[in-house]
Image (cartoon, rainbow, N blue to C red; front, top):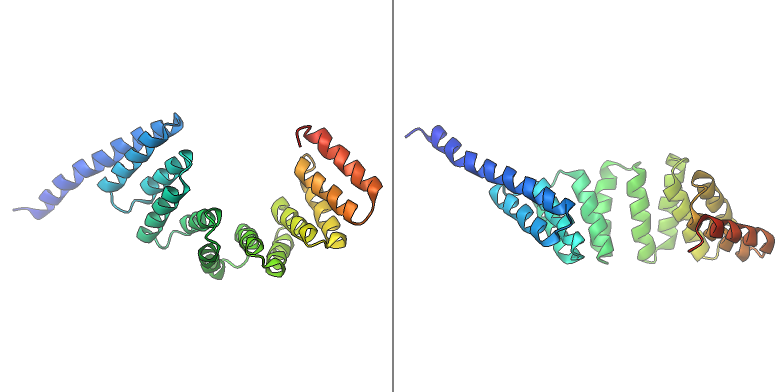
Length: 221
């Protein structure tokens, strides 16, 4: 028996089944048919075990159905099959954080930061996790490092200012939130937080001006 020919004949139907299910799953996902999309992505993953694209698709479909537990399960399965996939590990970390599994989320982020210590997105994610764990000094340090590495990135400035504001460190929160507002001048929430920081400093004139601007940007805020 020609084993190579036999292997090829077995693999071809599996590849066809994978492609067919992935196309159908993508259509179902676009049409927001969460259940159908998830089942089709899982069928694709059966045809091609450990396939990151299929398992990530199943995770998106689960999120579409507001099933975070299932989404995390699919992402973990994808990461287990593809442990060197850094972008996937980052998504697992975010899913863990959103599920409230902060210790595990931190482990995943720290593993990535050991490889990419100057990745601002990772530093920002690390800071958010630390903040949720009540480790405010560590969170502030992570956000501050992010602002130093990418001074034109709104996110670390916003998170730095917001965390300082929560710690009643108004004098330090104001410049951070001012910079965030300069980088994203039409973001109502940033301007509102700046107003709160001014209020903490008893500067009612600047606080009311900021609140008025925030309201102008978003009347529903």
